[in-house]
Length: 313
Ligand SMILES: Nc1ncnc2c1ncn2[C@@H]1O[C@H](COP(=O)(O)OP(=O)(O)O)[C@@H](O)[C@H]1O
Ligand SMILES: [Mg+2]
Image 1 (spheres, rainbow, N blue to C red):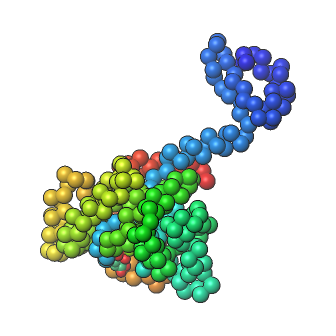
Image 2 (image 1 turned 135 degrees about the vertical axis):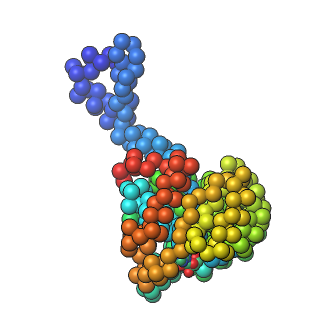
Image 3 (image 1 turned 90 degrees about the vertical axis):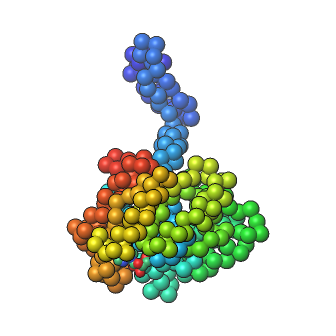
């Protein structure tokens, strides 16, 4: 339809559109606009958001490398910037869920198998309703999630979490993975497109080789999966051992960039455990919180997260 015909016929046109028809408006024989039923518009929007969602796993085969601390604080930081953030606790030890104090309430859904992604991993359904906390959505974990490990061994469930999360409407979905090797880790990595590898110790460095094996396995379902950044984390700039870790990490820089150092912050991290609040929300101006901010910005630019252009929820 020509643009000059639009005004004369607007009520008829709207009736057609409400009936499910789409109308293309032309000016000088060029299509310039479209009137589409609102449900199609929502579908288009959802499609745009889906393409944009970044699924990022934080992983290192050893425990204590600060995976959970970084997941929690990056989530809170991105949420404060207005991004839509989802977090999945994929560690049956449930550190992230416990850091948030959800285990303190015996009636919390965080204790139930249904609140975790266990059902998804077992092929029993889609993503359950998340828990809304600190402006992000959380799928909690508990030890029942460990059941998934044994059963995944028998089946072909590695792709289920990837499939179940692909239609979610977040800007970023952070996956806090378990330590150790196994099917649950492969399924977790297979749901991601990028991996952040926090390193806090020499052990964390030595474990990069088995992590590479897990990544190779997960690529069957996530072909573009790769390490997006190594993160020297929980480290003091002036401690010799910590200097050694940072230096050794430098030798991996041909595999992926080495990100900014996230400093050790025992007092603030202690407060985080006491208050069950992400450290970046307790003291946004603390050096640790500034390190998280710098890391968040670098990660955003590497994976293409639209900081400052967050889509309104
Ligand atoms: N920057 C930091 N400064 C001080 N302690 C930290 C820091 N980051 C993490 N920790 C502490 O180190 C321990 C291991 O961190 P965590 O995030 O649980 O590691 P992972 O998830 O890799 O096992 C936790 O007790 C955590 O509170
Ligand atoms: Mg952890």
